[in-house]
Length: 132
Image 1 (cartoon, rainbow, N blue to C red):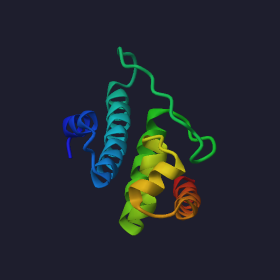
Image 2: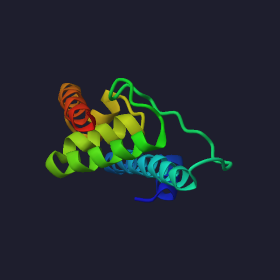
Image 3: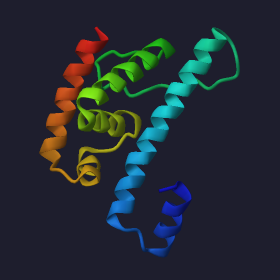
Image 4: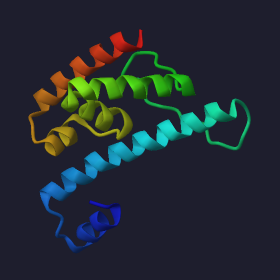
């Protein structure tokens, strides 16, 4: 579902639950793409440029820096996680890149908050091991 559709449904008061879930998942993917593309562009330029510096929430892996190389390493680790555990990767994407709460993620994925918390904890451990 495209963002314009979401806004039209929202304004009309006709947003179905599955449309809302799809939008939140999609928005997280878009945010991840924006962050990763910005990091790639900045690394390609090496220095300078008029790009805005992006600071990421570092809750995921302790002291994961917001430098571009770390962002790309995180993206690669998340891709690898998605291959083995797609739901864990989706939880990370929504939490880390989308900034959604555990309750919002649970609603979107149609699981309990406790399941999301377990997925988040497991994903953090796997990603931390992968990034070390």
